[in-house]
Length: 284
Image (tube, rainbow, N blue to C red):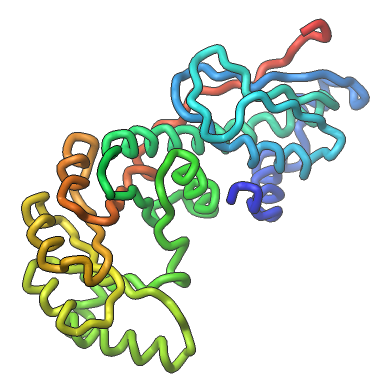
C-alpha cells in the first residue's frame, strides 16, 4: 500500500517544508556536490516506511540511488542500518525530514501493532485499525498497521457500511437503520458489507432477527459479555470487539472467540520510533 502513496501527498509535504527554497542548504552546499547518508536505527521496534521513503527520493530526485539493507516489517535494534542513499547532497538534505517524519511515525505504528498482535497469538482473533488517523496520512498509517501484523478495517466512509450508535439513534432504531441501508444499497447498486453496532445482548438478538448485517460490532462489552454474544451469534455473522481494549486486557477479549478486535490506539496513541539520517564520509 505504501508504494501507492499519492504523488500529491509528496508534492504537498515537500512544499510545506521547503516553501520558497531550502536556503540553509543552498547557502552551505554546492549544487554539484555528491554524498551519501545512512538511515540509522536508534530504538528497538519494527521498521516501516522503507518503500514510502524510496518513492519520496524518486519523486524529488530520480538520480538518487538507495541501497536497502532492511525491508519493511523487520524487527530492528539500535545500530541497525536500514539503507544508504547516494546522490546530490542538496537533494538528500531537502528530503531528509519528510523521509524521517514518514518512517518514524510508520515505524511507531508498526511497532505498537506488533506488540498487540504478539499478545493475541494462538487465538483466532485479528487486530483491526480504525479511522482515527492523521489527516492525509491514512494510507501510510494503515499500511504501517499491516506491516506490524494487523489488518485494515475500512479505508474510509465509502468502502463499507458501518452503522454506529448515532446512526441508529438518528434512524430511530436498529431495524429502521438496517432497512434503510438495504434499500439504499439496492437503489444505488452498491455491493458493500454491512456492519452494525450492538450495545446490548438484546441489540444482538434484534440484529440477528433482521438478518441484514454481515458483522456485529460489540462495543464496550466486557470479555464476559463478548463471550455471551459470540455464543449467541454462533458464527451466523462476523463479530468485532471494540472499546476499552488495551494491552492489559486484549488477550482476555481474544480468548472469547471474537473474530476481530479494533484498536484505535494503533494509530492515534503512538510514539514515533527514533531514527536518523546521518551523512557518511566518502570512505564509509
